[in-house]
Amino acid sequence: MLYLVPTPIGNLKDITLRSLEILQTVDVILCEDTRTSSKFLHHYNIQKPLSAYHMHNEHKVLAHLVNELLAGKKMALITDAGTPGISDPAFLIVRECIKHGVKVECLPGANAFVPALVNSGLPTNRFCFEGFLPLKKGRMTLFTKLATEERTMIFYESPLRLVKTLKEMAQYFGAERSCSVSRELTKMFEETQRGSLHDVCKYFEQKTVKGEIVIIVQGATVSKTAE
Image (cartoon, rainbow, N blue to C red; front, side):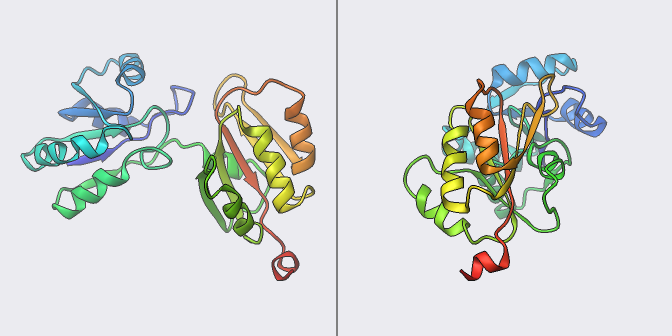
């Protein structure tokens, strides 16, 4: 049995009772970073063997973990913050578990893009999640493609690249396109800035940006798509 267990994205109170129960009962907890997870687990007095599972070793340890699961072990997969599989490792091990008949269960819980989307004031009935943009190869091609996307768009971004990305979005999507930028969600200095891509970019140009970033961008209008 493999459980995918979401962990808080900031406020440690954002954990479900069921998640804590599962973490207390599994044989092994797979962690993106054992040091980060140790602090979180210690806060809830959870003492279980930890094993590293991250993007740099997942191919190497995958077969061993699946064999352990097939032998009857119960494992929980957590990441540094949020839901496993959302811009974090999980896809490969879930696919292999399904392939080999290992039961997989994903618990509901914290992630960054849902509160950022709902809080943006932009349409939530149809949206697309793009995660982190390519750093170089394919970046401009993707912007060109998304310029006519009519659904609300969701992106994750580093604070170091926020202003650059907003400028590029203004160039490809139009400077007056509405957007919302949320940072430090659930934390003490949580902030959401709304407005046009031009205005929001100007705002963040004038300050030092810290924390994890979620960018929500209004979809293209039908007339823009036709154009």
